Amino acid sequence: MQGFILLVQNIDMSDKNAHSKSKTYKNYKREEISKSRSRNKSHKDENKRSKMESRTPPLPTRRTSIEELIKKRESLKQELKKIAKHSEGDLTTKPLSAAPDKHSKSDYMNNMQSRKRHKKDLEDSNIARKKPMLKDPSPEHTGDFAQAESEDEEALIEKSRQRRKLLLEKLSTSNSGGNAEDRMYASSHKYIESRNESINISTSDSKPSSKQTTDMFCETDDFSTKKGPDNVTQDNTEKDNLQLTDNWDDSEGYYNVRVGDEIDNNRYIIKSILGQGVFASVVRAQDNNDGNTDVAIKIIRNNELMHKTGLKEIHFLKEIKQYDPENKYHCVRLIHHFLHKNHLCMVLESLYMDMRGVIKKYGKHHGINMKALVSYSRQLLVALRLLKKIGIIHADIKPDNILVNEKKNVLKLCDFGSASKSDVYEPTPYLVSRFYRAPEIILGIPFKHSVDIWSTACTMFEMATGKIMFTGSSNNKMLKCFMDLKGKFSAKFIRKGKFKDQHFNHANNFLLHKKDEFTGREKVVEMNNINVTRDLHKELQKYCKNPSENSDKKILQLRDILDKMLILDMNHRYSVTDCLRHPFIQEELQK
Image (cartoon, rainbow, N blue to C red; front, side):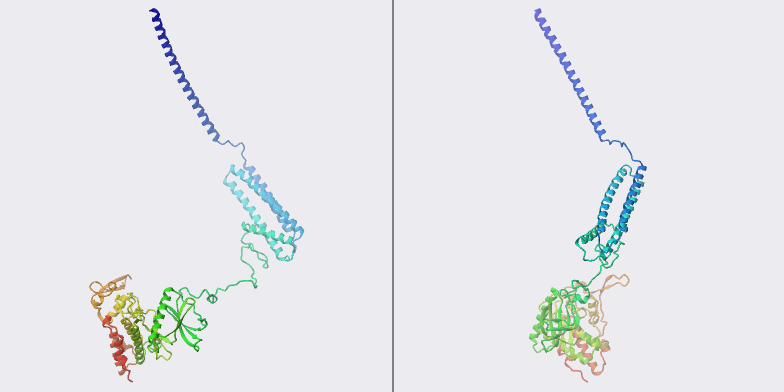
């Protein structure tokens, strides 16, 4: 029993020893770990310190003083002066002969070597100059070095200028038959000078001293021009430009007409220029194939739209010629058409002048005489009757499109560029010239042959008085002029218009567009009542030439026919047949 108790006590003691040993081992471990951590931390701090210390630049061991820098600068100046004197002495002491000799070649080689040495010295001086500048970059020293450098460059520029002058004089006096070595020597000098020019060593005031030679690298364009068979010259005058084959047209597509030109395989020779319109130019020419007779050639503008218009006019003229083979109905006759340098050309019978020229020459302030007026009005209405029979609306009757012969007893209607078939209607408010434009065109109402009757009435009034009948500056003002003579439009007629809203309101009152007298802005004035302010009979009496008892009767007849040709509603307006039956046309003027 005692033995068992001792055994148990021994076991307890061993357990206690083991437990105490484990505690001491754990404490030992903790101490070791804390020591290792402290060592690692100390190593890291040392590494950081070493890195920080390595980044810090070392202090300079030696500094160059300002006195040393000034001494170096003075020595460099002395060396540069010696080099400059040596190079100038080589150029001035040894004169150049008429041709390059051996001594000059040796001087050239020595000069090249001295240039290389000078270049190397400059590089060394630049290196020596840069080193102290890094350590003491004060503004005072940098300014001194820059001034020294600029003085050196000026010396080099002056030296190269002197050399260039001497070389040019030598080249100008040298013979052209030198050997290959001499030529190579001279060309090498020129190459050196060209390189100096390319890096801007020489200045702009340097000029060649001899006018016999030309320096291609010279700043001025003082080149001698020697005329020879290989020289190419160009005269930019307008006359010569017109002779170029690719300069037939002007900027607007009109053909550049020149008197004396032969066109259509030399069949026609242009004699004079008659005029120019929107669509074409008109010239008088001589037909060599028809006994040298005169013809009028209408040269259409080089434009796709104008070309199509010209083709349409040719079609109408051919149709008129077919219906009038004997040329009795006073429409201009088409003889021939062709294409000349992309211009459609129409050859027409030649007439003397247009009606506007007749009015200006014979009736400027009082109109033409009554007999001529009756004759011209009859012929014009005969032409309109033929057009109505064919179904053509001229749509541009005015004095400019009416021609007379040299005797001034025959009238012809011309210019069918705006013509159209009566069954083709395209509403446009700008058809026909504005002073001769009918009201249905302005309002956008489907029109018929009556538009030509209205234009003919305006033309007859102008022939009788020498004055334009309606002179509105716009379509709106033209409507006001119509109502001043004929009164207000009917509501039924206004409602048919496509463009009525531009000129009338919902109550059919006229809206006059005019400028305010004070502000100058456009304003619209509604007019409820429009009074007639013009008397057609008084105007005709005022302007008609030499009124008498017989002519007064014709004036009354003229007023009556014009009054019926100018009815606002086209459905009530006189037709061409009614006009031809009127007493003004039928009855001859009694003497």
